[in-house]
Image (cartoon, rainbow, N blue to C red; front, side, top):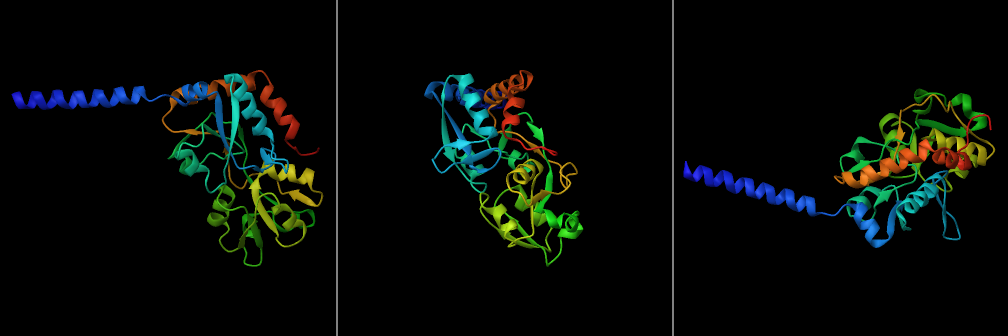
Length: 262
């Protein structure tokens, strides 16, 4: 009995020690304030959310929102370039305090990171040449061997294509010049989020978003955050809530987001 008591006490002390160590781990909120710098991972290739210009500066919806978040903290933004393939490894490796730039919420990402509260609902649709809109209305019309499907590698667009369009010819291209491939008839269809399709429709005459409010796959967008840091997540969620409540977020969207009929 004495040995059992000693064992129980030892187990309790070890547990309390582990809890204390976890409590001593500083939140990203404290780290950001201490460094005076907010490390933002962004791909720079996804208009209208994030785009790296030739002059080296970023622009877009989430670029403005990152600057707003940094301003709320009284710190500067440190841009951390990433790609859709390396976004999650960069987050897990601690290179980012937050990931921003049109990031879709997925369960696979949720296994390794936290998400902020939801920004918007935004589902997958086809983007095609306007002359071909009637040809690519459904998954069945696109999922054919003769259809040339083009996507950026590593993101949710590729995941959708592999899951639902396995018969189509899948090719990859960088997300900045991929749209010209459609116009030049080197590809037929790109599956992307409705917001990006509508933005490119407005930006590049000849491209049309197919059924932009009838999503082929439901999706949500949010900001990517380090896992298990509830203090930091709570701050980001509250900042985002106030941004929406005051209309600041909606004003930023109005600067960039194309909508049907405009």
